[in-house]
Amino acid sequence: MKVGTRIIYEENSKNVITVLHRMEGDVSERSNETLVYVDIPFDDFDPLTHLIKGIDSDGKAIIEAIPLQETEEQRKIRELEDTLLIQTDNEIGGIL
Image (tube, rainbow, N blue to C red; front, side, top):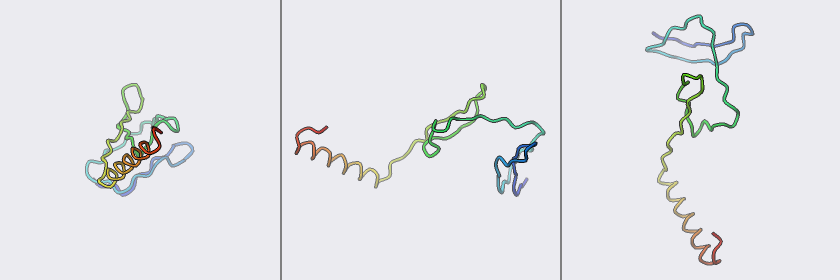
C-alpha cells in the first residue's frame, strides 16, 4: 500500500497536528478512534541526544539516550585539550 501524504489534525478545530509524507509498504489503516497524546515538559530531554522509543502501559513516554560514537576528529580534539590542560596545570602549579 502507498500513501502520498497523511495529515493528522484535531477534529473540531481543524488544527493540523502533523503531516506524514510518502509512506509505502505496511501502512496501517487508521480507525475512527480519538487521538491521545503525552506532553513532555519543555527541557526534559534533548531530541539530538535522546530518542522516543514509544509509550508504556501507564501512558508515559519511553525515552532512551542515543549512544554517540566519537569521531576520529573529536577524539583528537579531546586528546589535545587534555594535553593542554595537563601542561597548564604543570606550568601554573595546580589549577585543576
